[in-house]
Amino acid sequence: MRKKIIAGNWKMNKGPDAAREFAVEMTPKVDGGAADVVFCVPYVSLLAALDAAKGTFVAIGAQNMHFEDAGAYTGEVSPGMLKELGVKYVIIGHSERRAYFGETDDIVNKKAKAALVHGLMPILCVGESLEQRNLGITIEHVRIQVKIAFDGISAVDAEKIVIAYEPIWAIGTGVTATAQQAEEACAAVRQVVAELYGQPIADKIRIQYGGSVTADNAAELFAQPNIDGGLVGGASIKADFDRIVNYQ
Ligand code: 13P
Image (cartoon, rainbow, N blue to C red; front, top):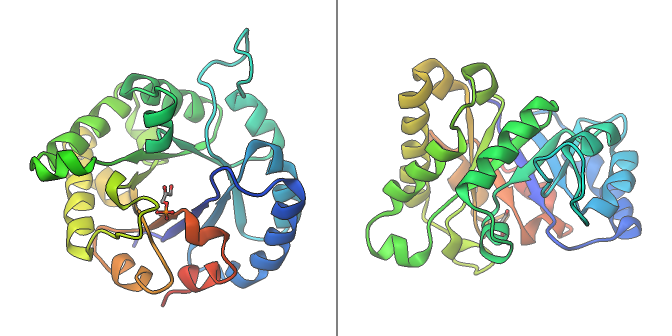
């Protein structure tokens, strides 16, 4: 049985004060232990969130990182720096980073490997555009993204990765994939992992759905056999985020 993992991607919202306040309020409501819960907060709010979540089961994640250990990369943050703070997860290859900051599949692969070397758990995002869905190439596209992202990653490391299937057309639009669409894509992702690493690893790896998840649609989405929780954007910084975590 895979344990569900429900992560909030706060995106560019909540500085340290607001992050602390939200985490202090929300942590006790989502700390039941039935699912792993992660708050992925802006870099500058990591310390405040870590402090607020101390002694609870809520883990803190970053939303990005560089793949190099150190060097002349102005404005970047390394995996070792995140690890030193006590960060456990890191979102890699979010579609907003791919679209606005030029992240390619190759960069995503480098970042996934670097995160694993430093003991961070990647939440690795894949997903198709509306154009790709309309062309009927959703599954091919997602398969390619997974194959490149996992290139050169051992089976032992592969199972530490959480994959987030996030159809781009469902992100921030209020248009959620139907449970059937989400399940079909997540099943396809699991199938690629099985082809790469064998069925036992594919059965262990956790696959989230992301894209306009709300307290009202979470239960149906998370009940699908290949959906092991969600990566939640807008609804993760709302006062009723606990309803998503406690969806059952
Ligand atoms: P929304 O839940 O706001 O659609 O965002 C999804 C997302 O991008 C999470 O990473």
